[in-house]
Amino acid sequence: MHLVDEGGRQPGGAVALLESGLGGSWLGWDPVVSELRPGLRPGDDGLRVLRADRPGLGRSQPAPGVPSLALRAAWSAALLDAVGVRAPVVVCGHSLGGLYSEAFARLHRERVAGAVLVEAHAPNVTGEVLGRRDARVRAARVVGGAFRHAGLSQLVAPGVRRLGMRTQSVRRGDQSDVGDAYRSAYGAGHCLTEALVERVLVRDLLAELAELRESAPFPEVPLCVLSAPGADREVYEAQAKMSPQGRHVEVDGALHLMPVDRPDAIADAVRTVADEPLSDGPPPRRPRRDAVDGLDVVYDACP
Image 1 (cartoon, rainbow, N blue to C red):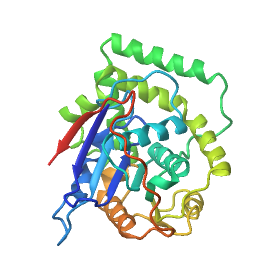
Image 2: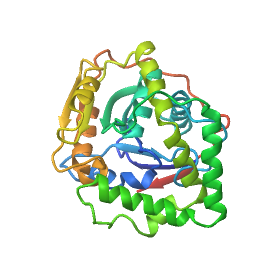
Image 3: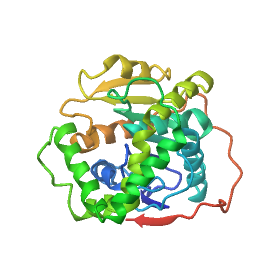
């Protein structure tokens, strides 16, 4: 598993856990992390920022089985244990990553100090959940494997990223963030495969989140919901009401790819949420664990 761990000069300081959108990698958060680095504000020691590639994406190796929100939440909790993070964290998720972040907040309430949800919605995905989930996942992996064996993955995955920039970002034709680094991050054969798996499971994940909203309450922590102006305003306002400390902010100058368009707005939201006190006081300390079975971490300790 690939993890990038940055910042956090002050012992015991706030920690932010960033969750990428569909098929994304750690690299997509670079503009936001640049805004969060120490020294940008007077007296600012900076947050400790964790961004991990989900299994099969970025530099993380694939994992067997079918992804789910509950599985990802357990995976994130194991990640925090593995790197020694015991205190509650600020979760920040973009797009599909917002679903993962919300699920983690609901299933591990005691580990969440606040949340930032960025365009955490799938407006183009409608209709009932399709049947034969396992068969759909197998088909996606077969297609992804065919692209890998044909040597096309390193062309297709970065190309999809470029298309997204043109259609979901105000920068549109500006491809300055799509170069060798992105070909490295998205060009591995398994990355395209896992992106296809996530795409065929979007309806399933939305249905799973709907069930969680009925059974697992959202923690009463600071919550900031960010969206592009005018898009599905009712959905985002409802998300903000999940917590009594929630608020919805429409961010000018951004489309769906807000981490590219307005990284400053996301960074400001993360800082603000991290600085707000918990309403119910700190959660009980968890017992220390020195190792997590089955979780191997490739650890990037960036200055």
